[in-house]
Length: 139
Image (cartoon, rainbow, N blue to C red):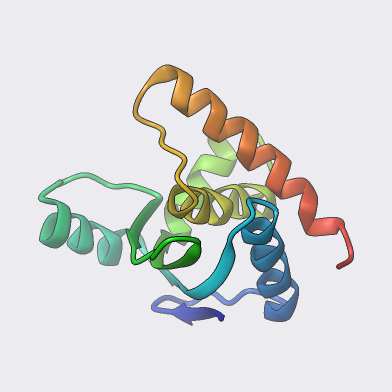
């Protein structure tokens, strides 16, 4: 089950559309959707999580905690809406597209994709673009 939680003044429009899309993203990688929780928050909230759990005193757009077991994809995806808005401006894309990129990024990590090396990051970016396109495909 895909769920959405809000720790800031933001809400997805049409949650069911996003839920269906994330399920398709997971299934397109030959995996099964388990419990995936998206927590939308502000910079301060995510900074505290970054310090508390990862010992990183830096702002970030996403932190994901992976509880995947085998092919059953599960985890908590924390997303700073403030960071996503700033990144959208910086990369000259609309907010909704950048948000989808970050949302896909979280579950792609659970599917086994990494982004630490240059090659891994390029593959991750390619997968993000591929998965964003699934948003408009009807199941």
